[in-house]
Length: 236
Image (tube, rainbow, N blue to C red; front, side):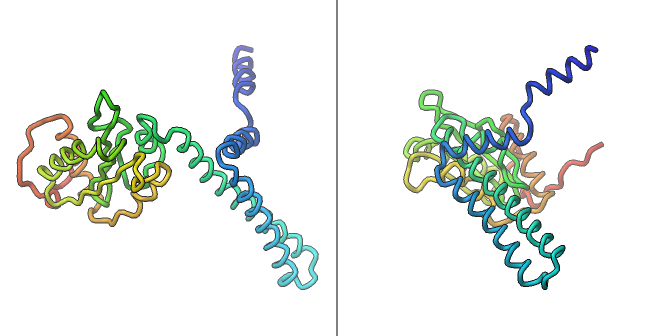
């Protein structure tokens, strides 16, 4: 009985999948007025494509016509879901853009595959709440400044020098996320990271992560070590 009561309470608390999707759609539509038209357009385009293919390829076969139309409908629904997901993510980031920790939220949930980073900044200004975040991937080291460039430039230069001192041969890419005109919009940060040219192999990425972890802990690090020649530690 107790187990049934718990299951009933859980079912009552958690909305169904369709209800969740409707809530996401409503949230997205509030912050992105064009989202509903993109979603509707994708759905209609899929149906129209299915009808056209049914007419051209079914050759009067009713069963094939129905199958093509259903395939077009499913394709339209899939395209609409993809667009909804992307627009919803953009709307969600739009709500937190400009707030302290916004870059950390991106690092926590939307880092591209092959990149790793902490949602906590590696350095921050307690007065202005500007911060610097760091990610590591096959593109090397990415430093992301959160805040106006005029205030974060010095912190960013300091962190770049630290990384360059212990990893002289690893490329460093810098991004600014803030109110400046040339800053990277928050929702585009994952895309910009994907565009960074690959320069490291997976073992080299692990070696760089280990080296930067030591740097973060302020442990003594031997100078002049080439990370391309460092092998990752094997699990014992």
